Image 1: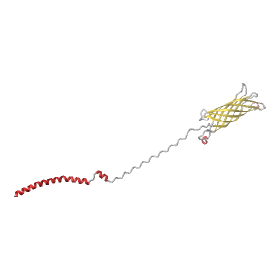
Image 2: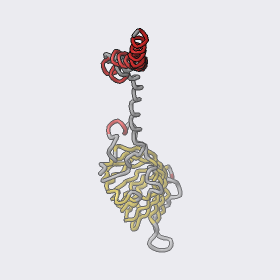
Image 3: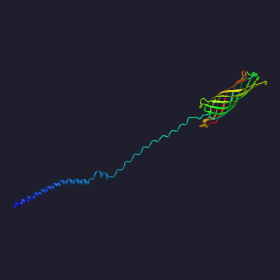
Length: 257
């Protein structure tokens, strides 16, 4: 009986110990897995932690550097183009001094007549290089030859001027027309000359302070010297003749365009 009882105990212990080993192995395997599962649940994923973490304050943007102030544009240079001074219609006059060499048929006039004269002129600048006008002038002279002689002469001429360089108020002038003169001697005897008349002249003009009163408009008041030669040629060989050489001061107002 005792042996039977012990055999029964062994039989019962054998399955029981197998079951215990199976249970123990299960616990050994499940234990670390449970531990890992609980750790995983305890620690949130990295993405979740990053999402749940409070957003860091944005870094303040650096203030933009102030732009360098642009230099003000340089003022445009004043135009250097000057309006023409010999421009538009004109009128004026001249004062001259000079000598006259005259020859008449009824008097002996070997001496030169020294004197002066005045003139008036008017016209227009038809091209920047050309002027056309009318000139009226007179000359008064005296000579000590033959007890004293006096000369009075005058000319009416068509005057044409040429400016080689329009920006330079230097003009070459030619004129043609008619004129004449009369010579009176101290004893009352007289003689004269007359007919065609021609003149050539060289003139230069200055325009003082014109930039102040006409800075952008042509024309202005001009004055300057003039050297002229006038001749009244004889109508026939040996006939009356007069030649006058003068230096004068011209005064002219140009109206501009």
